[in-house]
Length: 134
Image (cartoon, rainbow, N blue to C red; front, side, top):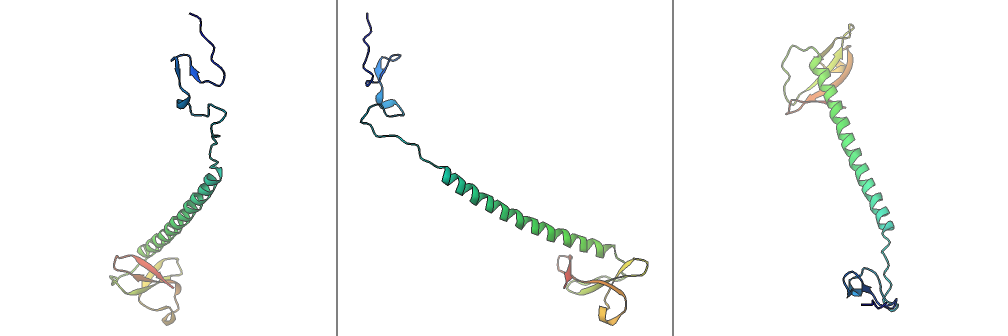
């Protein structure tokens, strides 16, 4: 049996022996509407820019929080390494000084009431964490 050649404008699948123009993902006739892909490059660029700004802002927030926590850790280490012969009371402010031999000590004496080498004033909060007083 001789195969008949179909015209170029007819969409015929030789494997299935069926007309499958409606199944194609592209236009199959001259009168069909033009199929264009949407240009989403601008949307992607805007989205990437927004996400990058959000992530950078969050990173800076976390870094600032980490730096503050690290500073608080250093202050607490400094105070717990200092000498003191009393039990600090929660809610009170104490003062940290350094002796001539570089040994630090904690005192209730205010800096304006003595001639010690003043390092800083610290407040003991309810969580037993020392906070630097400005």
